[in-house]
Length: 441
Image (cartoon, rainbow, N blue to C red; front, side):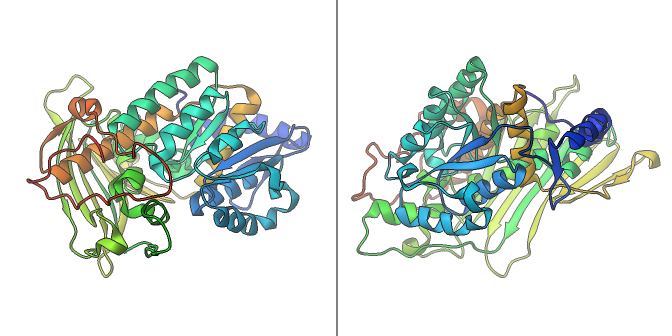
């Protein structure tokens, strides 16, 4: 797996290349200050989109922003209305986002139609429960991919992602992930400084995504259980993984990045205090707190720890950041902001920009890897962080202390055995201490 290039090294190593390329029309600046791959002197970059909801449409727009050479050539979604809405939202990109009706696909097999259309990469942005199925199909067909986070909702899905990642490597395919902080200059520079010892040995972290409530779609008696659950997918674990997996995975990913490894065990609490209406909010929790334990990887003794906290409750204090503690300093990170306070004054530092748009940058990096035939595969990284979040959910739902090895080996498979519109009993709300760790839906 190719490591992200830190901003300082990138600037030093590629300034001359970018200057020369700009003169030839290969790169052009976008509104966010990032460099895009421009159309002149480059072949067209064809992109298919699987999942045309808010994130899929947003990712398609990011791909189009990343390069004037990009054209959206296929759209797929379970629901036709999502495709229509996506086309409306992308209309500002003109004919580069105009997709023929014959290359718009609906239904549970829509992903197969998109993958069959010749393209340079596919965007996988359906509800996460479908990600392992779609990723396996894309790689089997020889497609490069952008995989939105998280990449699974259960250990079975993670094992599929890891196996498919190995297949992508064997085929020389490129995969970028929706953990966009790893493509953001402020994070890249901060992490490079941490790696170089600015805060000494990393010993602990605290990571947060505390916010208010998100959207929900009320059930409609005219729709089947399956359709109601998929349209309200955030609130059903077989689709979203719960918000610790669907959203908080970003912050857990930063803890793993700073620690240089995944947690070896965890214990957690969580529950539902506010979102108690099971018709509107399914069976997921509205708050989690997880104590993750990490092994030491630098020869020192003892363990390292990360406190993870996620909350979706209106009227509560918001906080989205990561705090990394070292033996000689502390780093505080959030989107567009990074600060290191160190015992050594010369190692203290505050990021002062310019910053980039990481949602666009990840597509710039993927497109460049495809064009230049350079290695890029972020699947194992994002699968590991997703599994870390799943492990935290398993611990919170059950009340048990869980190890990494046991969690990853667990046979849990939350995907219903048959995917079709019809009845589907909603999973019960987990009760810590009373709910066993399930092996299926």
